[in-house]
Image 1: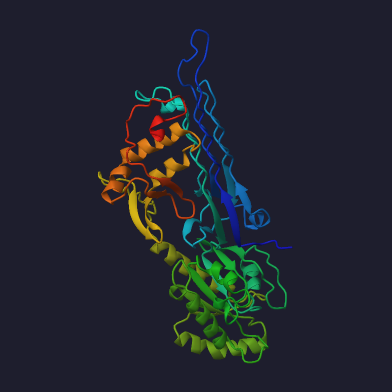
Image 2: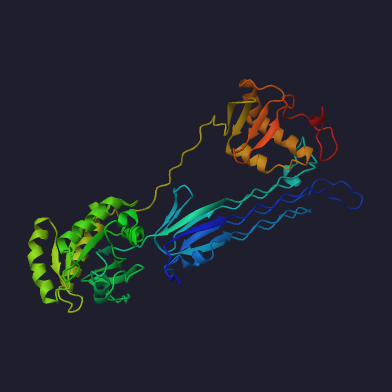
Length: 457
């Protein structure tokens, strides 16, 4: 059974808003005392909160469907419906949330960070809230809006200061166990490490975290071996330590060729948090407690130093060289932290809409059967979602809102005639109307409750 999951697809949905209520207050001697329908409650949100005590996405692997509570419908006597219950999903630090198109919705890196990934729908207004001087007793109410729904991809990228990179069985797990209190699984076969391990290292006054991630092989940037599961956990690290096995018995391998292979994979991967090639790095020639390994380390040291690397001979078994390696890593961490601006407060940019911003657009579309007109915009689409099309008065109210917004004038400008096909909404969920230009906004109602005589002229 899997115990560590660092990538999962989560099907999430905000709660639907409750419908508004159409009601008329009645009491003795006041049979029609006015509208008193309450508003529907708002749907609950789906929120993600970073919890440092959570280390994996395993919970969402076993339960990938999450939905917030729906808002309750309004009732008579001005009783508003209750809001839906929010659900809180606790994720580990370093979780990236992407939508189905791969666009980042939230990057949650620190304990306590929070993001709303699916908002609940707004509750519909009751007829008491819709009453006005021209519509004193509305016989309809607005419907609640559906909540946001999406398939979100959660990716976990380890948050550490230094990453140990190297071939399988290079001794990365042994190093992190010798330098910190971490106790990863250690064995003498490849791919012993199947999940990232984090350890806290102290060097002088500097305390930093080190990540031991699964081993790398040629072709990892293309998904071979543990491939992308390895490289994803290197992206956030400020510095890299190449752990080279000087005691390997594999034919055709040596520390220099291993280093070149790892550097090639890092260059091919790149990453979303910056180019991995630009990260500072040092080299640890491991397993020098073996006599042959010590001799090989002495031979390749000059070659690596000529290429600009700081090289350290270390042994996780005898602990030789680990103190010097720890202080070298601390130097890289301090330099990286010093390069980060102290003021990390995000700036809030307010971009007000232009005063002539209409909030909608009408597009003339040519098709095989003639001409049609598509209305786009958040407000028209929201109004359509809120309309009860089984109620003539509600449809007339929608026509009034669209006319006041300027949709009717824009249709006339584009050459629409009576009976023209008008579509509102996205192409996969559109509402089709046969336009009647004689319906004007503000025409007084002259029909019974719940009807609109303008629709029958």
